[in-house]
Image (cartoon, rainbow, N blue to C red; front, top):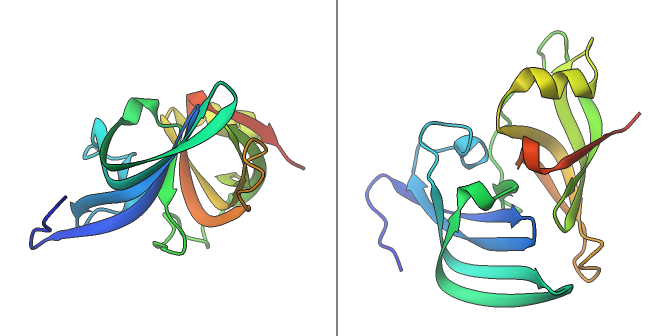
Amino acid sequence: MYTLGAEEKVSLVMAYTQTGLVRGEVVTRDSVRINTWLRTDSAPDYLRLFKAQWLQSVGGVVKPTIQAELLLPVAMMIGFHLAPPAQEPLDYNEREDNRVNKPVTIFMGLFVVKGNIRASAKSDLVNALQLTHSPWTSIYGAEISSPQIPQMPPMQVPMLVVRTAEVVFVPQG
């Protein structure tokens, strides 16, 4: 397992891949904001998860496994967030002039995300995505569900990041 250092914390997170979902604990420095971590220079190449619960689709069947420790390549991840009910402050100022929440649906592997993307009030979703050039895009006020796992109830998260080039965006309204 792990022993926390003086300036470390444990956070329960959820990481999505094209074929599944991993829920587990990560150890980071106290100063790390989990919801923006993957967009920083301090992002790891491997997410080291402890007490990992892994739901993976194999041959169309979703199978759970439990691992004491799991190293998940960040390159395989297509979505990431703190596990509810944990929250962090959002990474934007709600009073930003000329920026608005634009509703979007995202197909993320086995999951569907309904949420909002922050963009210029004068641009559409296509322009917002093309101008970003960031590998990760923040989604706000998200509801995550899975048509593949009907027994999983929809989950509400204030913010998650998705790998822009690995998910499908559907503009709403």
